[in-house]
Amino acid sequence: MKAIIAILCLAAVGAYAQQDRDLQGYTLVFSDEFDGPLSLGSHRDKGSAKWADGPPYGPASSFSFSHWGVVEAKRTVWTTNNGILSLHMIYDPEINDPNGRQWVSGVISSRDRLNHGFAQRFGYWSARIKMPNAGVGAWPAFWLASTAGIPSGGGDGYEVDIMEYYGGNTLNEWYDFLIHAWQNTGGQQEACSGGLGHVPVSNPIANWHIYGCEVNPTHIIAYLDGVEISRTSTCSKYINDPLYIIINYALKDDHTGEPFQSHGPSAMEVDWVRAYELPEDPTPTRPDPPRNLRIP
Image (cartoon, rainbow, N blue to C red; front, side, top):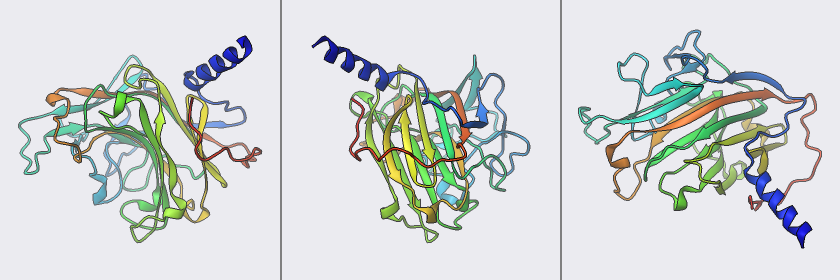
């Protein structure tokens, strides 16, 4: 009995241990530890900056019910302090918006509208994140998008939502890992989409967690705190172009009418973000786990 209890305890610790997966043989090719001022430029042309201030693709990039902050504005929605990036959600009653969009929030992208910046076709990406303490409508995310969609449309490409979190969900203790295969017509190819919804996570508002994903020629694999949680076959048609990084604190408008944080401020916090090249042989050597795998 003691042995069984010990094994269960180790499994629980492993499921929520705050460490990334074993990356021996992988090569770090992009990172930001946010130890100084944020290197941020315009989404139209970020120049030599590491990040752009908005999603670089077409009209659909305004998916948030908030307005994206821009580097030219006096109001700032990005701050760095003690090695932590905060993406803020700020309510401004003076914004004249006919649709009631009176929030401004932060987003960073590793690619700009000129298609300049970091992206890679295959690799491993991870970030250490703490969710905002906000109510229904809060919608932070860490995700990858195909450069095929820059600046608007293009070829077939993947969107990989490594982490999508919805404020106000039951106990605030789950997030979604989702894969969307976008066709050049604008529709989705359901056969190549998938992922794992409602991934259990231990109090992501109070606790830091590491959200990771590997994309290789055969599989797209999600990780939470170094533990594999989902594995989906890669469709080669949708991985012809590199994937770039977006981290955003967005606001959804499809909630039940409950006020968002009573118009109070909140922030999504990011300790670091990293991207790695795969080892020379990225072919998985172990069989696929069950598709309904869940963290204990």
